Length: 403
Image (cartoon, rainbow, N blue to C red):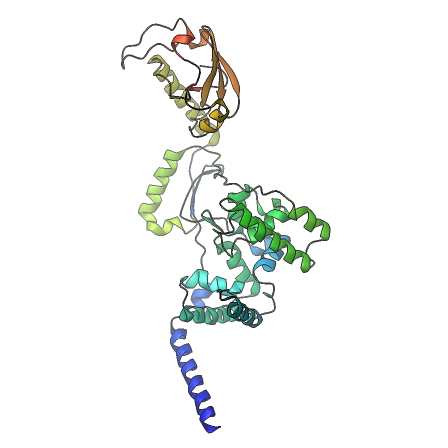
């Protein structure tokens, strides 16, 4: 009996010693209280319209109090149903994971939202017992330093959700091109299912796995009575609509944005990319659009004066049913689109553009298409479209027929 007590005492001393060593490497309470989100550098017009965004992480910080309640419930259902009742660590969850790991031989985690915040802000992702212990200790410290709302706010805006999106507002924009309050229950469940495995459960790269994860979240919402049976049935059969959304920039002024980036980087260094700086220029959307249009038209006029330089390529070895697919691989230039010749006569030609428009060009409006000989020499105006093009040729066209 005495030997057993000595053994327990020695074990407690060793555990305490390990905890004391690991405690020294934990961040201070002050550092925890002043956590700063990495927010990209943004450049705006004088009206406040976005010109460009610079930074490795795409993020749109949102106050958790303004986040949709249904989305918060979906996140809790997916990641941490006991968030508001535990003290940073879910002992029941850990015990359940240990039992499941023993039975299945797999490795199942049991990290609470607080533990995920600790890991994402302060720790590495290495799979070691010492890191896991530090994660637990830091989670306890976070719970004693911050409120539940503050912890959830950090998680909501920090967690990686795939395709360079950090936080749920950025993910809503990346996957659906929507704001948070525009998301359906199905879309909320889809995003809520991403933190567990952003790559494996990604609706763009792995839609089948993503749908399974979404349905799991919906089932959890139903079992918690956070959605009705009707809402569940409608959401679980909803089609997957996620697709990669390109960042919208209402003002096209990339050279101005690059000048701003260089100046800001010169003044603030690399930290400018994540400090959330917003730079407002004197650029006005109306003036910039007019300048872009004038420059583009001048370049087109210049190009036409130098004659027709030939076709882009030919689809002669490609079946007609695949033409549209092939056209998608050729980038447009503003309103000038790649198109394939589908029919041609001496005086007119029919073409199909990459966005499925059918247009007609005539010999009369193709009079500019003289043969390009050199920078200073062009041939005569064409007398027949058959001499310029043939069926399966691909060229750039303007859909308004200003060719």
